[in-house]
Image (cartoon, rainbow, N blue to C red):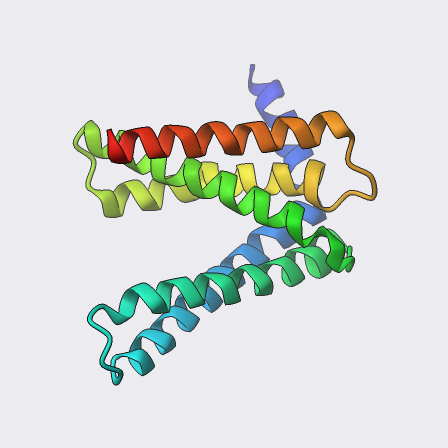
Length: 164
């Protein structure tokens, strides 16, 4: 059993995965900074809740930044046509994150801790999905169908939980 764990760690700790970890930290810092700056600047506007617009604009800017950094630095791919697949992965992992936080809150875990805990499985899922789906030369139609189906199911579950 110990050898299997060592083998798994050895397979996971590739230069690509190490780059992914560092770029994820960079992207997190960038995303939070963009949000904070926008929140500060929008605080001078007559908006009732400037953080909503700051979060929205910050997310768009961050997704574009993340697409470029993950593509160029981690996966060594610069094809801008892959952005749609990247957005699908971002949406899937977003819903996994909020579902995970919600489940942990249900069991009494503070949402700040739940959010921190979810960074690990969401980050790993983000890496795996981007590796097998986004940053590959050709995506098999079956994988497109699977990824879009996952997203559709997540959206339906979200809407049912939110409005039912």
